[in-house]
Image (tube, rainbow, N blue to C red; front, side, top):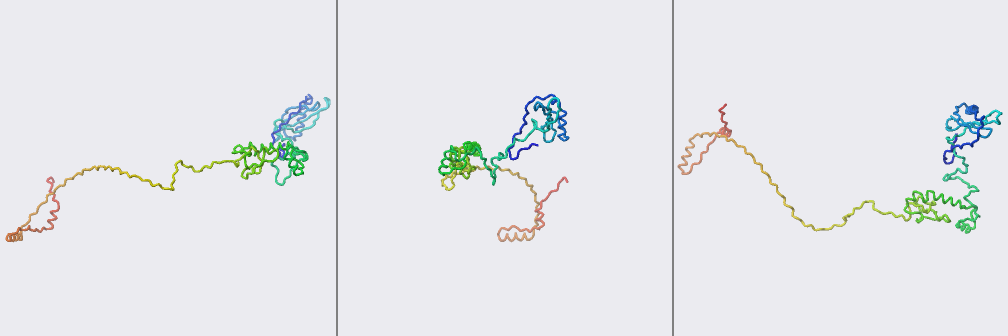
Length: 343
């Protein structure tokens, strides 16, 4: 069953190319039963689908195609090639194979092992030798079109074995320009300024210095990375932030550190209006007077004696003191109820 090549990028499903057209000899085109029997034998007893087509290989051979009912091979076909030397010789089976059809999925094209390593695959301890014919490098004794490279080689008196060629430098510039620290990055679009105007921007030497440099700001996500002159981030050296107070300040401010003494004129209080109290008349209840029955006082000898003495002495006689019986006082204090004549 076809599978993806390990270590390679997922590729778009490839479609099997149609074979070139050749006229099919009539005798070979009629050998469908012979081709089907050969396909059944090769499939090991598995069912074979319907006959799909036949196309000619050359003047003496043709290939019959049958649908394959094999699990996992949807769209594949059994291809049975029959051949005959001429019209007098018997038809024989040349080969029976399972081929992908136009709707089947196949693996990507073969990728050599040396080309399967992608950017970022190199880990700690890995070695990646460079091919001797790498187009990105040229021998060091070849004069470079980069003046900075020539100046360094002249100053040291000993050049490097190989240096970047022009195609190599163009490839580097394109990769850096389209990378995460290029002018089209999301960070660059929202930055307050570009690296070309930042104090932490360190231009590289040579012809690449016109467009690339190294970031020297430790707070930047591109610190120590090669950046394009059009890249930028929020850690730009000239970024200005409005220092606004996080607390809302009112327009009217009271200074409570000092007290101002202000003379205030007292005004008379308004007179309180008295509310008249309404007097409620009290209904008098008539009191029924009960007549008190008088008890006659009995004259005694003591009273006559006292009157005689007073006449002789020429003074007004004092009112006689009459001692009342206590029962009489109680009887006098109790109300006397007259009998009801109707009873």
